Amino acid sequence: MSHASCSWGDLLFDWMAWHDIPDRRVYAKSMTANHRLLGYGLTVAGATLFSTKAIFIKLAFREEVNATLMLAWRMIFSMPFFLAAGLWMVLRLKHEGSPLPSHRAVWMSALTGFVGYGLSSYFDFKGLEYISAQLERLVLFTYPLFIMFIGALWFRQPITRYGIMACIITYVGLAIVVGIDVPAGGWTTVIGAGFVLACAITFAINQLMAKNLISLVGPIMFTSISMIAGGIACILLQGLTEASFAASTPFLWQALGCAIFATVLPIFCINGALSHISAQAVAMISTLSPVVTIALAVHVLGEPFTLADAIGSGLVLAGVSYYTWADSRAKQPKPLLPIEEV
Image 1: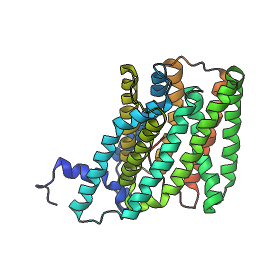
Image 2 (image 1 turned 180 degrees about the horizontal axis):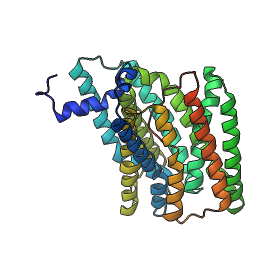
Image 3 (image 1 turned 180 degrees about the vertical axis):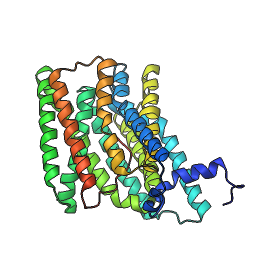
Image 4 (image 1 turned 45 degrees about the vertical axis):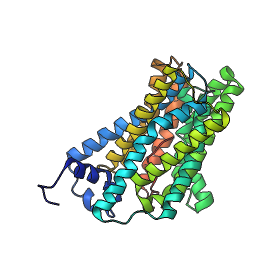
């Protein structure tokens, strides 16, 4: 393509299709300091925006405590963006003369999103009916450890010493936080934490199952297909359980904010970051997310935060950060995971 024929559309095509380049190492050699800084900035933005999800949900629950309704409206508002991204990638592939993903790969991606993402999101939103935004984020943040254990159980991936150490540190921290919340919330805390723990487990399974599909259809296409399918699952769930999508105007505004600022924008920020820096760097910087959630929960929602909460939260962050750092330095290849978050 000549410079004369270059358009903003072509530039956007190139940005969105970066992840489908067979050998990224060739491009990595030409990355400049400015590219890396942009990648770091996009990752910080994405992690920060992702962390607002629980805040939007908690604010919406002040209008009406209904997890399935909030989840349905969140996906109704966000699905058009993922549909547009998917269509854009189809145009890109046709523009390049590249083959489209096979029907089987598309249907498998849709099934993964429908079952895995839809189920995980329901567990997460349901858990927030019972527990604080701080505790939700800390419990959900343990999903990389479940990837390790489930990968060992189902895919014969090795369990490492640093993984065991990270797990011990993380769950000591969780025990401290949950131990504080249980006397105050009783079984409500146990039920809510159980839902979010189920979310972390199903999300880990979803990511492990998605590994091969991403290599077949590409991260952008997989994200579009799986998010649309997951959105359909969430909408159907509300239709089957409540049969009504009526909601107050403030509730809808919170759902819209959750869709735009805690779903669509952070996903594209992380996608953009991955075209400038490594997945390991993105994972490390993303540990910022629970810290931001805790700060917002304290200042926006007025949730209490004690010294014991700080110690427990610090241990959880330390455990997951240590696992991510050690895994990025290990010789075995790190699984390629999708970028969407529940």
